[in-house]
Image (cartoon, rainbow, N blue to C red; front, top):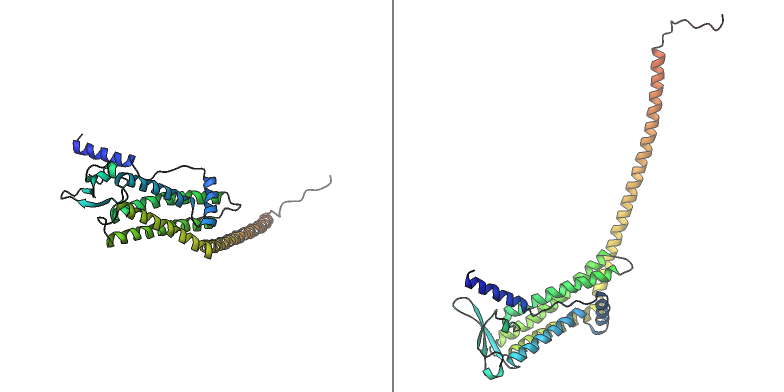
Length: 286
């Protein structure tokens, strides 16, 4: 195997094995109850809290490696490779003795530097959130007294829209700070923490608005009304079809009966026409 290709394979494997986001498996019924309670009482949800905890762990890793005030920025070399450049006193980062690391180096995999990296991290977190919301909403709908595809669709769309909007707001805040201050002037941990906090509180605000004005519930009611109307129309349509089919069947039977009678009368008429009236009648006596 080509040594360069082998090194790229090993590097990608290391990146996969050092993913920042992990998938946790819980009992969906417990998550569903917790999720409803959090939405009703605290304007948040289990998925957002889980991701907040994961981001907190990531922040703690950054602080451990770089400190609270550590600075860093991304530099693209002449060969096209990107490097993470650390600034400041090296003694503040004993686990990162160097000042330059390849961006794909697993040692610096917990750092999110620059707008592009913020977008990639947010996209990854949003993808996981969407999967979790879909799973929760499907289980909740399956356990409902009456399954409604319209209600399920609206609920999933609402959760996904809020997750995407909150993530976009968080990234927007982080990107705005980077564009104004720059990654080389503001601590890496501060930018990432500010982005996470902005996204989380934006999600809380969206949930508060949804609870206050009952936006999702109103959309669910409208969608279910349309669903019921369509079901009623469909039932009426099939009832009309059944009635028409019954009428056609009964008419066909009547026509068939009349046709049989006409056919029999026609046969009798033919018998009379072809009867040989010259034949002598048999005598009844001797």
